[in-house]
Image (cartoon, rainbow, N blue to C red; front, side, top):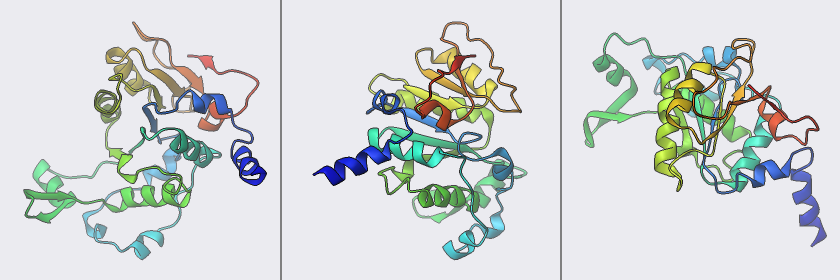
Length: 236
């Protein structure tokens, strides 16, 4: 009836519905650094083997991880229009003296592998909790598509692999990232993806011009791009 229709329209209030519809069933990767979570907040999420067995109550007691203004609404609507939405967070690296020590710190014993199996550490669980509290999982987002890396290079490699493995076209349809280095590497190998370069004080809104791809579109925030704005974003 009229009530559900009115409720559906309220979900889109202030948002550019066309931008979302253009991404229906498309492969989208949002790097959350800067776009969803602030760099200062993420810098506090230092992994520690000592608290890897923390309970959910202990994780909650560490405090909330706030989302950028409007980011929750954008992510929820993206989850509604595409099941190929991925979010990637670059977390501070674990200070391990060797790869073996890294595996010992990040894995738990398991008969499935002589090295054990990967265990979600506290920083990852805090990110997952923040997204869950923002209603992303309730909107249909699959928590297994919440990914993590520890390096800038990891962003580009994962973006390329996700496009090849998870999209019928063999590429991402949209990438949002605030790292000029990551974007430059990605656009050198993946030239047909629309890239939104998040302008931040750290990067000064400067992204290297790609050699054979369209320049990334500069945006000040996720909400700015997906809002019903009158002024279109500018190319980098």
